[in-house]
Image (cartoon, rainbow, N blue to C red; front, top):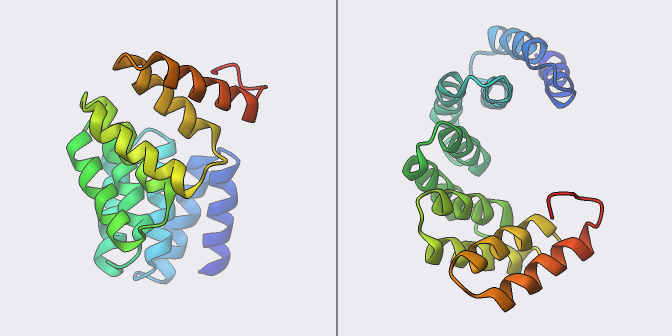
Length: 173
């Protein structure tokens, strides 16, 4: 089953989500309690735009192993994709509870707060993400957008400048 799992991971990374799903299906068929295979299939389904199917797979992975923060995080991202921002925040919060030093969890929760038009909570999460991992230009850019939205232009300009300095080839900045 591990060979199918690894093949699924490689296919998903290369954008072949349908091939990845087939490989994860085979891994699950051979080992029905394979939580990572459910999570992998969920990520492939999410990549294919099947957010509801992804959430079902992440639910199964969590049912098998409720102590893995990435399963909650991944489910939260699928919920965010399907516009369930409150659900995304709850899942990211659970991931943070299980792994409080993972900057991506705070960043992603901050993005969901932005979607809910809660700039104060978003800024708290972006600040925490940056304090944990200050080498990620996307974190500074996202914080800069929120700072700009709340009228803190000088701070926003500083964050935008940092993002550009860290990743000058990114046209988004």
